[in-house]
Picture 1 (cartoon, one colour):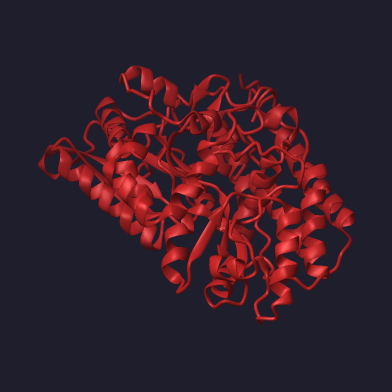
Picture 2: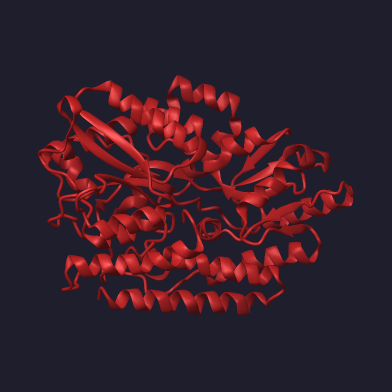
Length: 464
């Protein structure tokens, strides 16, 4: 249980403080809680901006949904929300983009369930601990039990991530993980009809591509903190101590061995002339790939459809690589999920659960996955005709999904539970950029470790 005797206002203030630094540095990819992580049931007396009078025209209960989707993903989400509203006559959901995950959750914390706040908020996986700490969301397990919600078809991997001390705190919705995108034509021409699965194999392929003197850099890379901590997971390492913050609240990072191997591999690629670094600019990395400046890069699977549709060559997708001799553990269920505000009146709360039932249904998840690049979070979606047709047209989407479906379900692949996860990723980005600029690998890692551990210690002071 959360052992701090501080009140709800203090916990929310701590959460906001943890988010602010990350929001200034990164978009879309934070913040504090107790000696045993995340047992707050989130039943504090907030009203989530709702009351029994919260009715839309025609006596339909109005439900506010804050999300962080944009572009094509937002268009698909809007169509799903419209489908729910048309499917019944009791509730109407209004979806609003509130910026990045960190920006949206920061606003949610600031409003603390007051008038105008969201009933449903989409969070990034990095926001889970902060949401639990805040006390202004309700345990999803409690809602599942109250409303007899059938959660038996949810993937074990996503339940594993969003469950803390036996309780699930968010409803899985948009699941993704980092993958490798590669120009299949270039790799085929270099004699690699199967993409290498190891660091060493990619380095060898890069040498073969460079030897063709085609003017294309074999590897493009940007410093992407989320990909780095997922690579640590795939390599069998804990990102943070105390069982990734799940057996007890994390007090320091634990990724040093794996990050050292990753950074040394990247530095060797760059020193060999095989790598073009893009700093921390993912947009320009994608542009470099589509314009055939680079033959591969690592980014989120959520962009899979966009990457494929943006290229005039065959795009291949592969799981994250790892050093030779290692057994892949897989990835944790990154991406996003939906939290329900605490303190809603029964009518609104019932509507929220109806919406969750709709958006986690097999057909809706198949539609969502087919139109974006996210993975379905329920088993039945993979068996639908629409998902089968999508995978026939875009087999790359299936490759990306299989990385999660084949992941082991254990403490490592539960993923890191840390209020300062955005800070950890920001520090890794800074460290890798330093390596890009010629700094010593170990020195760069040491600086990241020191910065993150200091942030963790400060956050923990407010909750222990």
